[in-house]
Length: 281
Image (cartoon, rainbow, N blue to C red; front, side):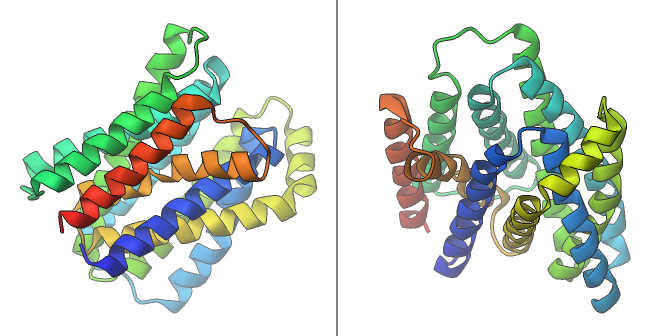
């Protein structure tokens, strides 16, 4: 992984974390996800019309990833209903880094240096520390749903890594993936909403914030897809998920939230993990 790729993925992590912090302004997560999906639909549609088709070998991955990411959305919404965001989110992301690393090393024979392995392990540990820092008990159902979400993130990250490498055109692959999600995500959110009129009203009310978040989310994952075409999946996944820590920093600076000793320690640990990954190149 070159320094350019590392910096790009870290930038993606900051954008990802920024969006998750901004999302606090939208209390209804289905409305939030719908707005992101609508941005995906518009931008992805423009990309599909202006870019060449990705290689046919990547089409199965596109279809599978769209299904997985839609399932991810449904499970994530359920997980947040049965567990605290501060527990579910870092837990799912930590599991994803662990899962992608195992799959990349065992199935793709990706080689990581000792320092890189150490860096990935530190990032995973930091995420798990954030997940279990809170003292309140999380219902078993919430934990099981969080594990299911982590499995979905692992699966679609791995599938996208394979798909973008087969596509021959990372931007085209990303455009079609966003376009497909732009159809499935808002539709699923509307179907899952208990009050569809309120859902539509929420879309109108939160459109400006949703548009900003959608652009940040789209830009962040476009960078990840490109990085997966040129760098080891395990390293990209680990660096990407440091966005959870970035979200914590934004919460501290913008929303004046107190991270606590564990949050500060996890942030420092994640930074050390990034340094280890960089030194291992």
